[in-house]
Image (cartoon, rainbow, N blue to C red; front, side):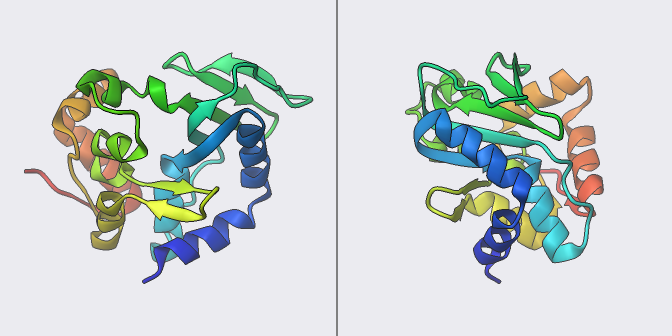
Length: 187
């Protein structure tokens, strides 16, 4: 199944995505990746008729501009990790410079999207859409979608993620899987 084309057709018709992507492009150069529920939840929605993702967008940006350009009628805040967050009337856009990704910094790795993918807490989160290249990236996340499963991708990050939620890792996996109609996998 061509997940790339299914998702690209869906997201490129989304006016909110187009507006979010334009904000990100005005404020960065190089590659950008849409991550999180906007990707994996919407692919699950398209394939398995699960619920659509809530409208918000999380982008990792390769090279943020030094000066932020704020669109009219938007306000700028910080997300829970201290990165810029554009807040509009209908949705928000998290703007995450690749060099601030906790899992990459914690492991002392080169700042690449491939290293982001190896550091996501859960398998389902190890996916991203690059609208510059119009590609889905992340074989682990794509496999999780194909097999309708959720498991730990990076144990240390899963521990941190679960601790922030105040829950055991198994509960976090179970809840994420249940929210998608997928199966939890405990290793």
